[in-house]
Length: 383
Image (cartoon, rainbow, N blue to C red):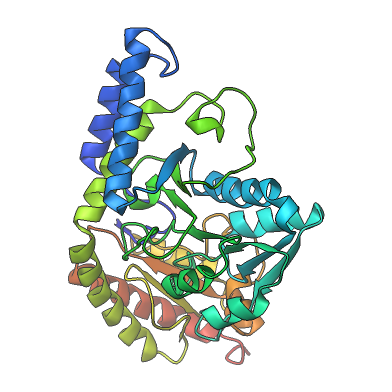
């Protein structure tokens, strides 16, 4: 079975599985307890936190452990907006944010905040200029995802961060769930205040994520209880997942350059094939992340294509795993100006460490066969 759905989740490193099992066996004490077992567990957490910080070169902030990217986005957006409400009520975001950010912003709108969704170009990019033009005296927060989880476009995070340096009262949040370990990311060098990430996107365990919070930034906590995670997130820490996640991020960062080079080559080969097929349309354009190729078969239901690929022992996906079970056109593709047929027919291929050239050739052969079978069913060919 060829698994081309690494954007949704990734197979964990064996070392990650081993680390998680060992910690579960040996360090089951509550890290908030004062006895020796609790102290040992707490030390593992802080050692893991320091490892994450060192991998991202962050010394002027702290990394919180959360349950994943969704919680990190919600804590960053709702926590910042509610804490800094006295400064203003205006938030700026791209129109192609992940559902966890998009829905959180809709909730904040219901609370009286004003949200400006920036348009994207037909290639799927926002611009720093559009951020600047949207700023007002009431703006308190800007959020732009680094790599779009559906089409893989890389947003100009460094340029936006440079722009916002002149507005120290405005916080800058970046959803890095699909970029961490895949493309370069420099939170402090780029002027980012808050960064969300998720371990299972880079071969770590599910149920654990990170939120970087720059020194001096305050957040309104979403959960009440103890003073865990600096008071930002109440609840007993998941020590085994925390330790395993820090190992995953270290291994992913160490192999990032080699992985990106290999995946870019695979993506170029797949895009070249798609460009030769009039039935298919590529979505998004450079700059793109190395691990994502997205295309549409207008007029065809994407789940049909996915199930036909599965008959070839190939796993792919339609759009974001969080939204793949609804039958609505892709909000991301509509924002790019795609037709409803194109927005309904999107298929996402996302690469992993195991993929080589022969795997992409096998995928191309399977897609060719799928197109041959579906061609008579295209609108206009039916009698």
